[in-house]
Amino acid sequence: MNPRWPDLLPSHDRFAYRPITRRPDYRWPNGARLAVYIGFNLEHFAFGDGLGARIGPASPEPDVLNHGWREYGNRVGAWRCLDLFDQLGLPTGALVNTALYDHCPELMQAVAARGDELIGHGHSNAERQGDYVEEAERALLARCRDRIAAESGHAPAGWLSPWISETLRTPDLMAETGYRYTLNWCHDDQPTRMTTRDGHGLWAIPYPQELNDIPMIVARQMDAKDFSAMVVDNFDEMREQSRTQPLVMGIALHPYIVGQPYRLRHLRRALEHLARARDAGEIWFTTPGAICAHMYTLAAERPSDFDL
Image (cartoon, rainbow, N blue to C red; front, top):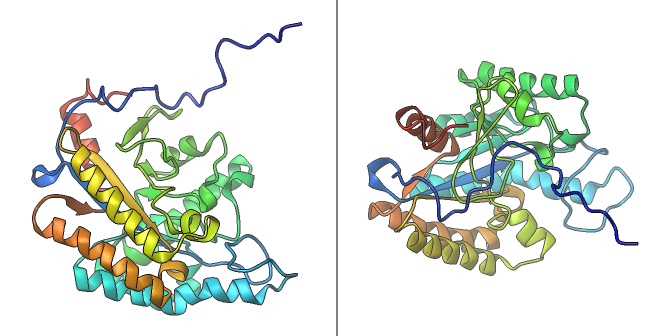
């Protein structure tokens, strides 16, 4: 007997398929065709419980080895990365666990003092957002929004779920709690407008799962020099592609990984390459929030091109 397949597979129904070759044309500020940003992940993990990336095999809790390796990022690695960003004059989109305001307020103050964009990233990366029921998920989004607003004076416009973990309701709850964009989706090289049940919609700003030190260095065990070369090659190729259409390139970094001195040396070379292109006026080095704001402006000016 032949199986009976449904004609249509289940869909998220957040946006329609549209090939990259058939999109509206536009430019980024200053006429740039390629927007580049750093997603700087600042995270805190519960001691003796919960999730977390590992450099070695998991041990019975308390897993001191892996917890201590992750904590290196907050104590040392993040500060070395910030020094590098300062030297090159690079802004970041800082993806922050709000637990850091209590754990290491000095780090959060330093990021805010640089003028970096603060983006909601849950309370702790020891938890997975997709495990929440609806009211608990709404409370998480609101709690993180309110804490960042209270500490910085500005509510976050964007959100990246811990572990990129969503429920079927996440985009709806994000829009209903005041967020304007999500970084959870890695499906495109341009921003995509998503539908939400309140009718307001949400922008999906491209967030990388290839140019990302966790899947590349930790999961695939790529050497730091190869990851650096990957950033440069991706940038050079996208710079060529962007001659015909606007594109977005993100780089996702975690200070407990790239903040290790030998990895930072290789990252430095890659970011210097991008900074030279920025100085030559070839690209827009920016933040996810600025990209989102530009898309809202374009949508208001050209609604037929960017309607939901």
